[in-house]
Amino acid sequence: MTEPLATLRGVSVSYAREGGRAFALREVDLAIAKGERLAIIGESGSGKSTLALALAGLLPPEAAVSGQIDWPGFAEGPRAGRDIGMVFQDPGSSLNPVLTIGELVSEGAVRHLRLGRAEARQRALDLLARVRIPQPEAALDAYPHQFSGGQRQRIAIACAIAASPKVLIADEATSALDMIVQAEITALLDMLVREDGMSLIFITHDIALAAKLADSIAVFRDAMLVEAGPARQVLGRPVQDYTRSLIATHIDFSSPRLIGEPA
Image (cartoon, rainbow, N blue to C red; front, side):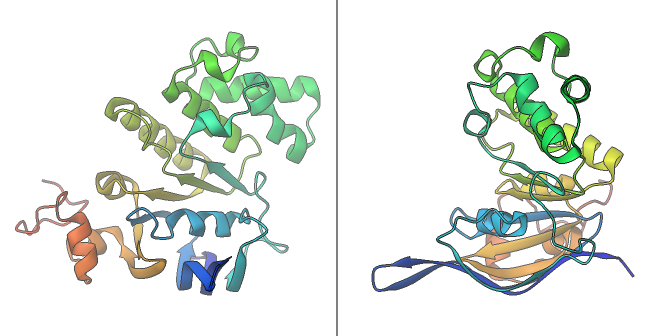
């Protein structure tokens, strides 16, 4: 039996508004296995990013949360930055423009691994080389604005894995990039997850990306989970009409071939 990573039971997230509350998530039940690659798909506003923030414990203070999220492998729950690494859609916003790349990447190692300045700088150098930043030593003393969008996203990934997390959450991490760079970042995520044995939870509206990377898929609509299961099942034989309509432009249902099978 696959070891569980996280289990959500009746998780709801809402915000106060005039006349009542607005739900960003409503009664979500979901099991995530250790080592799993879970894709969370759905239209904009369906609750995908809220789920990611709830899992990482990064919801804003005004969010009202009910239900339960259990992490069996973490006695006191996972810590964002240490146990869970986050990669956001826009590295231009997530990377502090007044800090050098070396400071940004080493921050997690200093805070969570208690590395000294020299050790942390060396770790930052190693991570920049690992995510394939050109001339990583020179990059340490450069600033985010000196890099392209794709390179900034690579740097953001290096920041996310600086403390060797067990879980990597990527929230639309490729959607702001052109197709070639998207493919490069996807390949990088795939490599890092495999090499480090991390669980991967990625939020995307790109069905092709989900088909390529995911073991399992969870489909969200209007703050609710409407379908979940193995990627081949959800994409090849969707149960819900909404799921079918969501992926119809990407997958030919007239073909008997399932997702992941050779052409």
